[in-house]
Image (cartoon, rainbow, N blue to C red):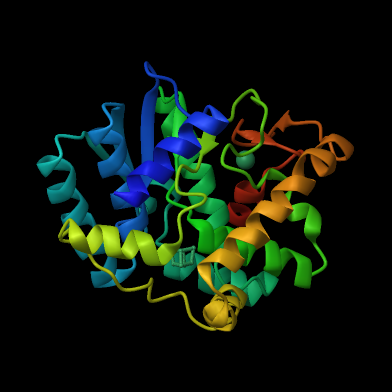
Length: 271
Ligand code: SF4
Ligand code: ZN
């Protein structure tokens, strides 16, 4: 299968996962993360699933049930972190407060909180690597979005192995689907008859990413690959010129570039 072959090639070329690694896969409930969990398990890696219950109504409930069933069927342990227990509120409330107080819209708030929880819990689970289901389309969208917003440097960490170097306190994040187009993953998941939700998140509307995704519909997978590969050629130089000191967040102790990490800044607005 082409998707499996591309995953193996990316893992080998970038040295993403070692044979003995404890591999924690961040599960959203969607086709990308379910597919990569399935493939890594099939390849014989020591895999575990990690999911966040965002409390997005029925959508989260169905995703949770699906992933419990999916992981059981594939004999993979699963941890579901309850966002309300973790930070006191569900994602809809948090997003509404941040929109009102900071005018932060779209998926920014959710993305920051998810990264914070995933890193914290991947450490608790003793992960050597944290796998995410980001695919070629996500990466091509990132390159264009960052470029159009004039924030090219935001993509400095974008590569199959995020960050490129080990940073104390961060579990190495890896993206074995980095070069696999979304269309191929969809076909793969359907061919395997994965019993999961194929809909997009109900909160993913009116965002810049959604607009970019729509706009990129006319772009072929080959062109998306060129966008991503050409940007990858710039990454080593951008990284060498932009080295940030990583400290510990004064509040939660997670790694951060500033005194207070972005997640703690968000939490402080909820009080
Ligand atoms: Fe969160 Fe946006 Fe992803 Fe929905 S689409 S889960 S709101 S980051
Ligand atoms: Zn913090």
